[in-house]
Length: 157
Image (cartoon, rainbow, N blue to C red):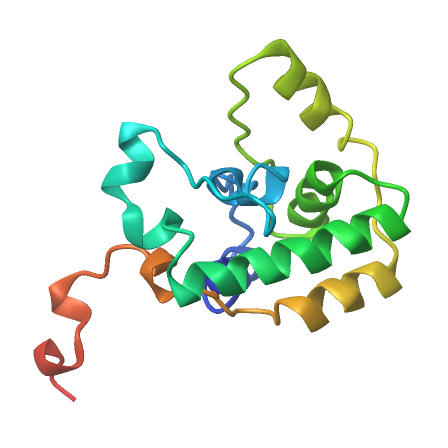
């Protein structure tokens, strides 16, 4: 989910504001937890309430699985874990102050802290952009809530 790059990050950077993004592992998608060869999608009650974001049978989520496979291969090629690649990517943006990580176990924490010193080379960033272009959200259901006041019919222009 890269739609934050469309407006939020450029505005924050322009005005010197810090950004502390949440869910840099995209709700587990970038942890390697959900893979193309897996038959089971997320089963927690929270994930079931967000089926449009996690139902592996949906075409949008199949495209996310395709992207995860490509990003996982990129991470392997770079000598990193997918988690390190994802967190280092978020940390690399100059408008990002620090991502909010959400480890539930000590193992999660250790795998995420390993990304703190990773610096991604420009060629790796270019490959990420080729897999998921800047500003693009693969599944539109992840764009979040939009105020009805911002819908086209509510605007004065």
